[in-house]
Length: 155
Image (cartoon, rainbow, N blue to C red; front, side, top):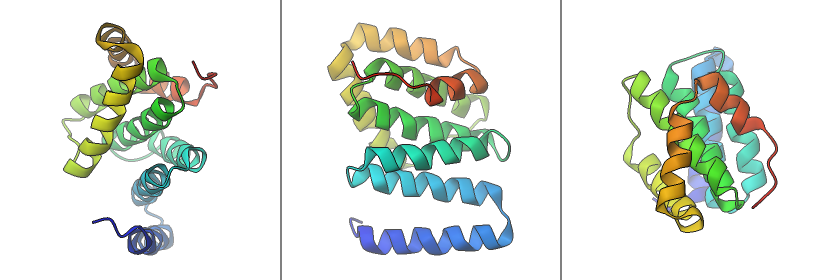
């Protein structure tokens, strides 16, 4: 609802509870929301760190949608960093993970992803975006994760 201070407080409280319980899926989900908040505040470097931590946990625990969330988050970071090809591939990989897990994204995440798509399309054009997105959809989670963690210079 736009109250970032209150949101951060709730995220920290939830994160602490999940850590206390040893709930790795909950910890991963909390890292995603920390990343989302950092991205919203314009701190792409911090956001990337949170999304990478989530991805590391998602690769070893929890449902497929956790990995998809991390890929969506890292796609957002890539898009604002001038790495539109990478963003499109990560979006495709994330979407494929959601479908494989018979899952979906919620409305708030959908808005974040729409901004990422719009940014990547604006940078690449629709045809190149579609090609890169298809490349990402063809990746396994491990391939998409490896791609997300590669260092790629801005375009």
